[in-house]
Length: 194
Image (tube, rainbow, N blue to C red; front, side, top):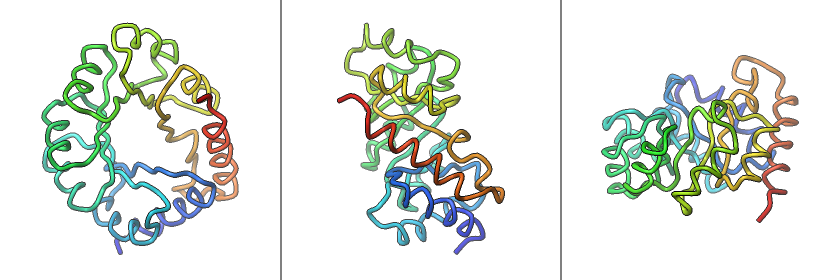
């Protein structure tokens, strides 16, 4: 196992125990490709493990080969959407403008990531749904527990939460604090309106 496996395992053990069902491992963390197969073996069907921060074709291919169950990219690239779709792996590309988001959605993305979501806020989803009533949106960037509730109430398909959930867990922070934050997010998502 790669050196990053131990840190990933400490954090994922807590997240999975708290009921988190999907975790995006980002390529900004060294050793992600090498860690993914072992993490998939360890967590099996208990959690979907995706690869995020995919920005080019070779990283997308490596993520698929490593066994990512989904892909996330911070950019709007129809070429990446088409490549992921051809590989049979769901992809959630990022964008901010209606043109970027609709371009990725119409190219076959499973959902689109409004990034950075903190810049526009949950009311933006209502605005997008005017011309694009069926678009599936996942806000990312600047999403904390309070704004996650507002995005879910506005109709977001899911929320992508990084720092407000993980805190300092990867740098030796208290795992009990991580567990409390994770449970709060799980409860929030479980209580979302249908």
